[in-house]
Amino acid sequence: MKPGSRIRRIVRIAVDRAGARRVGAGSVGGRTGSVGVRTGSVRFRTGSVLTRTGAGSARTIPAWLGSRRTALVFVVGLALLLTGCTSPPAPAVPASAGRPASLPVGTLVPDGEPTDVATNLAAPWSMAFLPDGSFLVSERGSALIKEITAGGATRIVGKVDGVVPGGEGGLLGLAPWQGPCADTASQPPCLFLFVYVTAKEDNRVLRLALDGAAGSYTLGSGVTTVLTGIAKASNHDGGRIAVGPDGLLYITTGDAGNGQAAQDRNSLSGKILRLKPDGTVPADNPFPGNPVFSLGHRNSQGIAWDSRGRMWAAEFGQNTWDELNLILPGHNYGWPIVEGIDAHPDARFTNPVLQWATSEASPSGMAIRGTTIYLAALKGERLWVIQPSDDAATAAASAYLSGRFGRLRDVRATPDGGLWVLTNNTDGRGTPRPGDDRILSVHLAALP
Ligand SMILES: [Ca+2]
Image 1 (cartoon, helix red, strand yellow):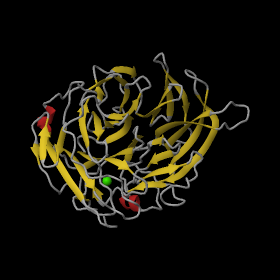
Image 2: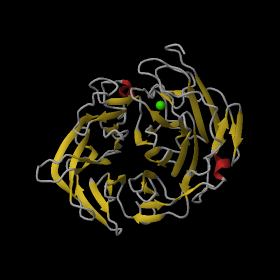
Image 3: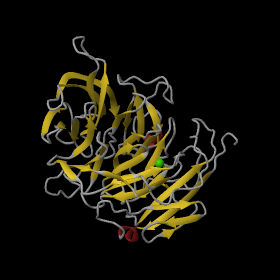
Image 4: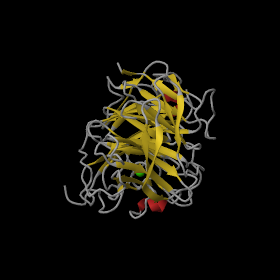
């Protein structure tokens, strides 16, 4: 493989959305849109399908492009990166024989009727389990952090000061962290909560002290500013944060309406950032002294790691394709030059592993159990279950809970082996049901 050379091969399938919906739509555990392909052949398990293979699925985004069009197909694409030795280095994704035809037997998928964990939340955004199993949820507009107790009560932990909600901004991501105590009187480790907030002038990440215990958590007096100066806007504020398996803080930022900034390494916009818990830049970040971990993102709001240590991110597309990306340090994911899988390989950019029509996904929060990815879709009003291949070059995907609970904002793996799913119907964009917004407990069972 010669340096600088790169070959991508794209296989894609378009599934007639209406046909796919006839299979299992509207029932928990029903599978929709499950597709797969092996190179040179196509196998379908359910639904009526249209197939198409070959290049041509990417869009180059001109500035004058009009409104988001309604896509009528669900498309799964894959790109096999065979070589590539530009700087930063290409991912170690070998050639693959193809993708599984559907979710493999044994995949843990939603089973049975979801039950309410909590109801009557106002525009909730992020969920977090604490080390002791306690559970917190953020509300975007009220700036409240609430605890759902073991007994099922909802109580206020505290209000985050300085939040200026507006548009898609407000109190967004939560990420618990255990670290050194601020005072010598406390027994380490102490418990903290990173929060991503929209403030008066910017989006920023703060670290709050959490005092108390299960059923009585409160916000402590200490507030540490971790990062400021992330551009804010009515739309595309990013906002998901998580502590990775390396103990470092990962932050998704939106392009805040300035797509070109996503390509600028010196801008915090349109990135996934990586910082130490104290806000300093780790020595092994891909660009020295720079918090940028990956770039070329439009508005990623879902990040998680699988049991193999691989980092995945979901991303909202503009007019055509939402994306699931395998995140590698220093890689550029193409926005605003490319949306979705690039049909005309450009050595600068890394293709998504999966893409969806924006009407089918508009993905926000993400959880991973083992190597199975669960993705909460807003506009798509469904929970995607995704099983990547061992080499992460391909993935099978099926939709669950389709149309049952409205827009879905976040999903978390629970300590007892299930999922909790957060709805998002009360922020003005959805159609609230009685009791919305709610947290749903979803039981998982192995796919037979
Ligand atoms: Ca992309």
